[in-house]
Length: 597
Image 1 (cartoon, rainbow, N blue to C red):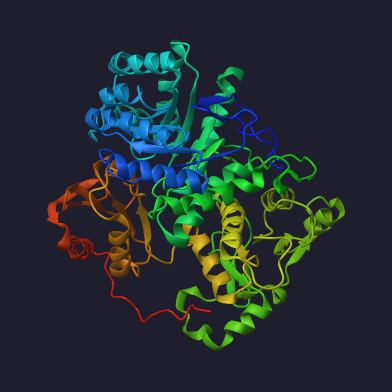
Image 2 (cartoon, rainbow, N blue to C red; image 1 turned 60 degrees about the vertical axis):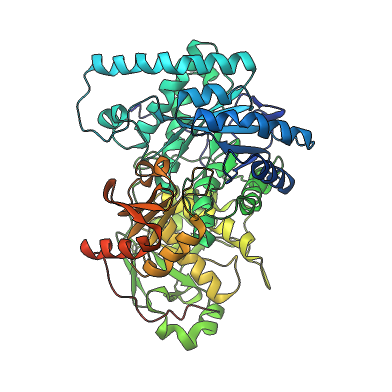
């Protein structure tokens, strides 16, 4: 890989990436347009009335582009009726056909909707999880086959004025890509670029890219690498970017994971359209997406960063995770820094509010009091303060001073780049903590975006959440951010896809049942997938998978290998827990946690 690749012009200042405009019906994406919000309906595509009602509901809630699954040509043909009825209702929201595996479905869908979404990993290309070596000749032969199958769709989209999303998902790469590049961000980029080159061969440019993953670290690295590769290819490769964390899950966890992945990239100026994928009714995705996009509207607060430019540390690589090296300190009996656990701080006020139940909080307790930690807080632009700290003989815990008019991500990056690496860093979710009660969603999303982004960059040895003022909720938020960033695992991790028209069971109800049965399994990753399209490939690095195989029937996986087939849905959760026991990952549930307000 070209070591000089850069994905944004300045890591210490916000500026939105300049992209060309792509037209999706009457909606412009990229260019000077605002960040567009998308979602996907969950109704069966053959049910015209249900699909139309859901599209209209999403549009009314503020969704600007709506996606509909079209798994076969028969399903795709009904997009004609859906589109006609949506337009007859006076709604002009652009419709997108979600295509997997079937080129003939894509060709049919292009007649009726404004955009086609294809996944290079499972459109034409092979994905049988075969281990083999591809010679250059065999690799080229498969590319020719892809060219023959993909070019007619490109030509149809070009002739009809349709847009396209070339959407690569981690875990659903083809065998050809997997065997040459592995299941990596580099493989994701190469897969998408191959399809983009075929589009460009036909002078077709009305497309956007996406690099989705359920792991925020993988997602962030993949998008950064993609943008860097596009810059390297040349100025006319400035295609818009669609952001999404695939299979984010539900509730707080889904929102936190989405905020880390989507929000951190938006903060670096990457992203022209977004979709928050929650295992909930699609209508609940819209306010989350709009809240994530709001700070990056023209003139938004994130434009205000005036940190002085400084040289980056040579060890920092934005395309590959590595934790920032620091010395180890012991504060209030807890070690932090170096390779030690990232610690959870709280204020003295919150500590006092929780003091009566700290002993019963198990793994989820506050660990260090901010005011008693001896932390040195400085303005990262202050040359004298930086020099004084770096001249000290012993390592000190350091953080950014409150009250500065700096974005959190940029401020802590500059701090990390300028102070000696031996000094551990305490991350804060806000430099201007609120007084009084706060709105939890408005506190959750920026905290997850800012702290999560920095943790995914390897920056941070402890965290302090103050944007949420309720003591128990702020503590829970801190631990959930650590979990979602993969920094400190203290509970089960779920990869749960959002419902769509392909889903073979009630995802929301089933996910809750699985949570109730397995939520105490620390460090176990369980994927809940509605159909074979999203499993096994898109389960990525899950330990166990629960996948819809047929109506009323479930297949169970260990990793990407199916081991139990056609289990009646009523028995499947119990059989999943049996499978976890068989593989030595089961422990009995502890007494209920006291982590409440």
